[in-house]
Structure formats: structure tokens, C-alpha cells
Length: 373
Image 1: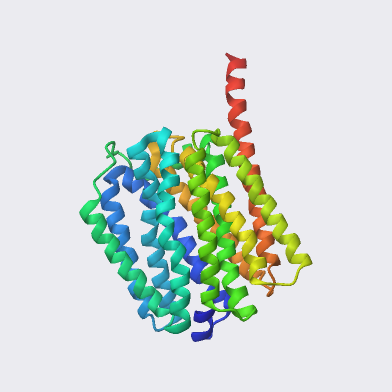
Image 2: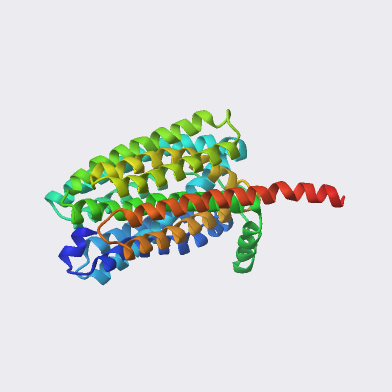
């Protein structure tokens, strides 16, 4: 964002839309991909989405104006939504409720190795080549992924629903949103992910623009944060059968809140440094990663007949909340880390409240049924 802000001479709030509008696009498109995959199958939908990601990357890389750059980013985001939604649904198709949490945790360990290197690679490209090259790399990776999916991915949805139309889709969303077994985990996941989005929206500007650091420096620190994210997912896979899901998720939520509050306190007492911004982020990555796989598995398996819709709605909530948090952090930006840490505290606290309240409702429902019976 700082480099686009400079090259196009646009306000930082306008450059921030490269993230917030992308998240908003994902929020809308994830509501579409899940039900489509429930009706037509996972394979054709994820192939179409990946092709759209490739097209958006090419448009963004060649964009002569900020408007076309934002359009390309939105198309790129619309395409990437398919992978966000259908990865969880495919894992659920293959492994079911009991093993999907563990498999998602281990799968994330594998998936994170490339993303943990990409900010460092992107930083080097930004410092030595230019930001357009990043979109060229995205397009190349997208075409490679499209070829691999076409060659290797079978259809996993054996229970496609030919009757699923627009009305039934919205009915499915309504059923899910009224189910505390789904709503609590989905909101917890979305709010914890929003903390990650807030840090990645604020830290590049704070390090590069406000305090004169380099994109490479940011990429190195981000790689460390990703390593702790990997460690958290690995720990989640190891602990999946040893600790009840609810207790594990709540403990990690408390860890996220404590880390965020400690970061806000440190920012008030200590002079700014890159470490001050990233050390709490690193701890947050670990606690959040431990909780993310079990809480996703809990949400997607709440209504087995609507696994695609459940995954899509969860991604939509994730991106809608993430987009709002990112834009609020951007609007409140004052060259200090306070808006970022305040957002982290708020999101962590709300995540705990949502999960705890929905869990309390779920526990009350059987008791009320027993009393009336």
C-alpha cells in the first residue's frame, strides 16, 4: 500500500481500499461459492474461481490507473474466495466431523510455508523491482494452481443438492445463523481472523512509511510471525484429541485478549520499534492458530447437510468483519500503533463473548427441552 500510495499520488485511505474492498468482495463471493458447490460440486466451482483469480492478477499488474488496480484486486479477491471456502468443505467431505479439525490443522501447516515466505519475497520485489511484479507472480502461481487442480482434484461432494436455489440458499443461511452450535464458532473465527487482518493492514504503513523501515524488514518479521502460526497449527493438531474443543478455543481466546492488552500497554509505555509492533503479533498468531482449526471444524460440522453453505457463510462473516476492522484502523490511523492495538483488544474480547454466549445458549437448550418434556 505505501508504494501504490506514492506511485499514484493517492491518499492513504484510498490505498487502504486495496485491502478493505478486497475483503468486502470476498465476503460477498464466499456466500455464493459454498451453495454453488453444494449444488454443482466442489471441482467445477474451485476451477472457475481460480481462473478468475488469474484474470484479476493480470489486470491489477497492468493497471494504468488506481481505479483499474482496485478492479483487478476485487476480481482477484473474488476468485480467491473459492479456495477459502472449498478447502474446508472438501476436507469435511473426505474426513467428516471427527477428523476434519485435526486434518485442517495439519493442512494449514503445509499451506502456510509459502505464505510465510511471500512477504519477504514481496518485500524484496518492492524494494528492488516494483509492486507490479507482485501481481505477475500472483498470476504465475494462480495458473500453476489451476493446472494442478484440473489434473489432480477429484469431485468430493457425493451428496450434491440439485434442488438448491436462491430461496433455499438463504433459508440455509437463516438456519445456520439461528444455530448457536454454528454461530458461536463462526463469530469467534471471524473476529480472531480480523485481528490478523488489522495487524497486516497497519504494520506495513507503520514500519515503512511512518518510521522509515523497509519492506524487506517487514517481510522478515512477518516470516517469524508465520512460523509461530505454523507452530500453533501443529500444536492444535497434536492437542485435538487430548483437550475438548470448547476448552481449547476459550483458552486461546483468553490468550489472544491478554496478548492484545499487553501490546496496548507496551505501546503506551515504550518507544516505538518494529519489535514492539511484531512481538505481540507473533504471540497472537500462535494463540489464534491453535484455535482456528477446531473452531472451523466445529462450525462446518454443525449442520452436515449444509457444509458448503456453512463454510461460505463463515468466510463471508470473516471477510465482512475483517474489511470493517481494516477500514476503521485506516481511518483512525495517526502514525501510532494505538488504533491497531485497540482493534486487537476489541476483536479478541468480542470473540470470547460470542463463543461464550453461544455456548451458554447451546447448553440451555437441552435443559429447557428436558424441563418441558
